[in-house]
Image (cartoon, rainbow, N blue to C red; front, top):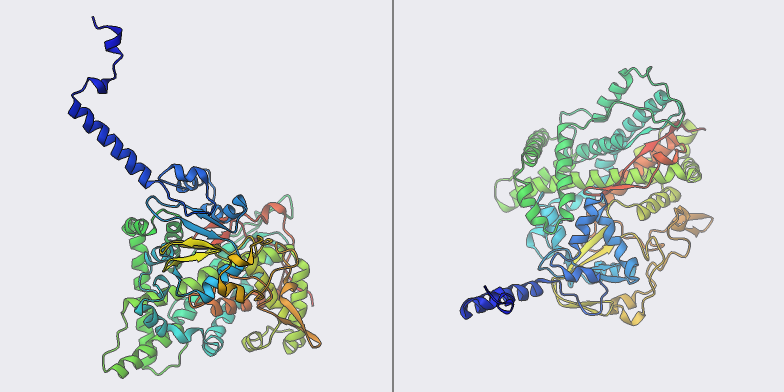
Length: 580
């Protein structure tokens, strides 16, 4: 029988010395490796203390948030308030540098506008976008020679001349089809609210597809759906209340839009994963992604063929694709080569143009309608401002023409758009990556560190943090008075904050205060002018023709869902004809 003393000896002590040493060495190495892999905070910048105790960092908390049905993107915007600091750090993936979250308009604008050599597009965003459209300039660094070549291919698509003469007529035509659809729905619903997001999503795609590719041979989805609504029997709907939502048939997307949505969703999903590049590597092999890519390629090949025929027939430019075909032909002649119409760069630039023009406009318009449904006084003021500006159209009780909407300034309409975009833009933040060792608000920022800049929160839609002037960059200090701060409640929807007195009238002031919805600088949103044009025409024609009535609280929540953009979870409208 063994003695109590012998049995109490640890199993490790009973092993031969060499074996014990090996085990101790392995355990020590594992421990040291684990300690080495733990997140390494940058000195002096607040962070979540629990995050540095796990190699997953903050990703563990974000993962739990997802499991509970939360939205990971909101987590980023909460960290600065949580730590009461304009600059905090987060740890999003194992063995990676911390990401900084900078919630201060002045420093963010300074980075975007004046510190381009220090900061470029963030690696996460490049990987997220590059996984779906790898040959579009949005997924390239500014220093990449191909970035300049791609921008050259599309540089004139955002000029006022091209937008007003080529894009605007198609936007106007399709917007009127949308107004006709909602006028029909309003008559059927007879004062009851109905769901509107599907209609907006579809018409935005109708618009950008024809603007990008030309008429081709496809009929407007909005027109097709209008016929469905017209022919549907709604006699069986007998609600208990005027606030009960009227049920219309689904406005189902065609295969081109479905394919587009699958690809947009993939980008949106990849953004909140530890490695967007790894996400796409596996996701792109899935059957639904392969099918979506196949539909996209067939659509583009077909439309490019039609555009080449239009060019050969001597037809004038009517779309972005027509312009790109002509540009490639001229470039080929100049270089003494054959034109290349199946370049992956042309395909991705074209498809990226569609993506940017569809998703951001659809989302922005949806959020704007939610604001207008609450602020009916703003609707009426915008309507009166347009009637005063579009004098002939008002006198003749007709629709404002493309020329009237694009050439005649209506400052209050611009202010309504800008305020909706400030409070509820389609994206929640901008990411840039340090290209050199640098500083932000007095803190050391090593090369390779990404900086996330929320587009809502302190200094934009909330009161700013108090920051010592000495902590700011030299270029930020020298532009102290640029845009300033919002003195009137920054969380409130007040279009008037964008207006300034001018002689006997008011003028729209785009520099009135903090606003970064379309980013800024060299890498600011390429499609910004197109987005404004689409939104202006849609808003003008909607408010000219229709009135948005009040909604029950349960149908006008401010809940959101995240895809490529951040959209309203519910978009209902109660429509009636405007009164003259």
